[in-house]
Image 1 (cartoon, rainbow, N blue to C red):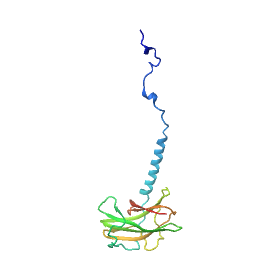
Image 2 (tube, rainbow, N blue to C red):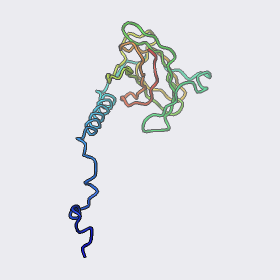
Image 3 (tube, one colour):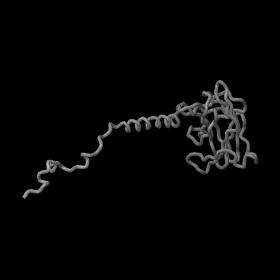
Image 4 (cartoon, helix red, strand yellow):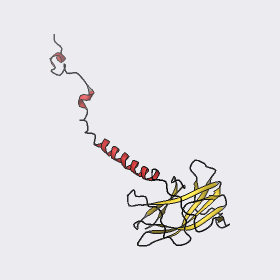
Length: 185
C-alpha cells in the first residue's frame, strides 16, 4: 500500500524559510546613513578644525569684580572643558541687527577658578558657515580674554552675517565650544 504523501510532487523540494523572505532591497538606506554621517562630519570639522584665531587685542573694558546684582546667578552657567573647577555664567544682555550683521551685548562672569572666552555664531538656516566677530561693534567691545573667580566683563560684538535666527556660541580662547544661546532674527 502506498502512502498518499509519496505521490506529492512537492515532497522533494527542500523546506527553507528563506525561500519565502521578501526580496532584498538595493541598499538605499545605507546611502542616507553615509550622507548623514558626512554632513555631521562637516559641521564638526567647521567647529573644531578651524585655524587658531590670532590673538586679539585686549577688550576695551577692564574686567571688574562681580557686583552683587550679578552674583545672584544671572546667565547660563557653564563649566570649562577639561576642568570642572573652572566655572562661570554668560548671557546675552541685548542684541540688534543692522544691514551689515548682528550686534550683541554679552556678559561673561567667572564664578570659580579661571575661565577663557571667545565667540562665534551660526545662522540657523541650516548652513554650516562659522561667523566670527569683527571690528565695528560699539564701545565697549569684547573679544576674547581671561577672567578669574569674581570677575565679570560686559561688552559688544559685531558679527557680519545675514539677518535671521542665529546661535551665539561661547568658546574657549582656543576655539573649543562651551555653551550656546539663541538669538532671534
